[in-house]
Length: 141
Image (tube, rainbow, N blue to C red; front, side):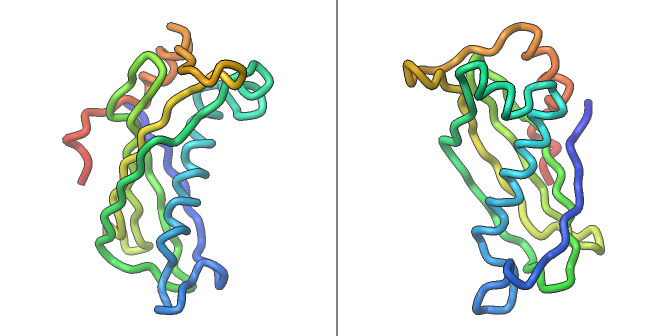
């Protein structure tokens, strides 16, 4: 099974008053990852919004292991640990440039219909493409 993996540098505006990457930046990186996942499965955000539905984040959990600092490069890797009819659990690991675990995270996302506000079930074709990124959660470091 596949994962989505990308690198992102730490910029000055990512740093908090303690001199390391702010907690909110990890959530921003996860948003980038979710958009990359949607693109990878052929559902870029521009297309699904046009089709009248979109993702809604309903839960986030982050466990911070090592701080990241200015001039570090973070590697973000993500995969799905569970897929429902309208929702999914996304797992993330964020590594520093030495390959050390900086953070682990999970998010639960739900597709909603914008007009009704109710869950939007994904098609069997879309589900098959998401399943390419489905990995047993026990692999989460």
